Length: 136
Image (cartoon, rainbow, N blue to C red):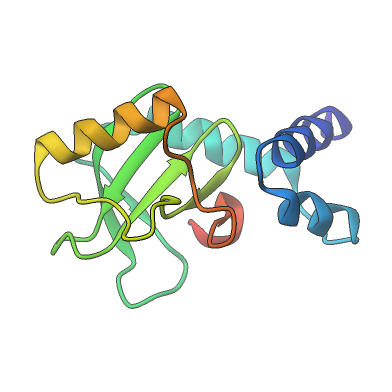
């Protein structure tokens, strides 16, 4: 089962601009793919209004503002910091847009989610990380 999960995540990372994760996985970085899958499944079960927690950082708790089957957009209480979680690929981080996205209004959140679903916007491949490395 672990080999199938490893192949699944590495295939996703390699085909979707997350080559750094694919290379990291092939350089001998030990990653527990079963716990990564379990964490992704737990994140999919979370609802709007619940919190996700980072292992490190000035702001550790981010409230889920909007979600769909694949993506979660969460922000700090002040809404000055945000993250996007891709539960299919097991990756989280900011958007690829130069100035990020606005998470201060419902309209801007809906626009961001629509952009993610349509593929017009995606997670920054330079500033993203596997969810098991940064989330509790």
